[in-house]
Image (tube, rainbow, N blue to C red; front, top):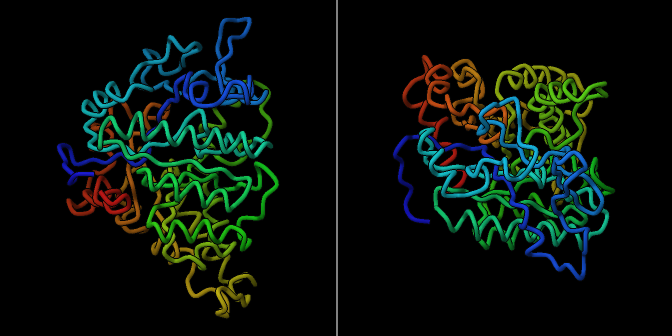
Length: 384
């Protein structure tokens, strides 16, 4: 990558690419996998949906691109309705320029907002093939199109060793972050997140100096809802807050204490709930037996935790905002631990009012803190 160049002073730390219909059908062997390959199917109503190995993907949607639609409340139902800026790099660059975005950190969509979709597949070889095809495509189609795109890989979950191998392969190709489902044991039978079997995954991220990105929505979310519109509304509201369990899990399962150089990005987390949650977690932590329980890692015995959850967060974590008022949270988390995004092209995106939203949310913030949140933190995190 050439030296970073800023025209607008904004690196969007959480945007999504819409995978095209032929991504996997072009790259996976039809003779080997047949209709198990991820593909679009048309229903009797004329709507299209993604399928893999007999499972419906993306909640039965053809795409998540509501922010680019004429009516944000009406998403596309067929591929020919999907706006090109959702899946064509050159068209996305035009929207980025209109929104005042210099660089865009890329997350998946069909593969799961947190890369969780293929983790549910029970066939390790099919999971591996789908993941590798996705990671190759993102580099070849988006990474090669412009250095303004920051690719991040997804990973197989069937084996921590397979996870490590794909991280090494993908980062070697040019991926700059690792998208990881925050609660993998919800998806398939794998070790609990805090078990030592996962340590090589955290270690390789430390070694390669790439962030582990835990996108909201990759774990179980809301209870039963009797209507589709209620289910959709509940999911939209609860998605950021669902990160609270993931934040706590990485702290209290001792992943963060054991791996102080592992940088954790809680994408699409928002900011407001985080302050309340960290206050409560730290308060509860002080009186909890876990905080004083001895533990051993790498031959060294520790007499409880050396840092509180708030201190661990300020050492190695980042929250991602896109609509919150930044000033009160910058003083609490530290401006150097907040990222900002447009969340394109999802329905919750600030597009087409991205700059208006920034002006409103950053009111009263110092120039130095504003630059940290809008671009300096992301530039450091992704080594731009």
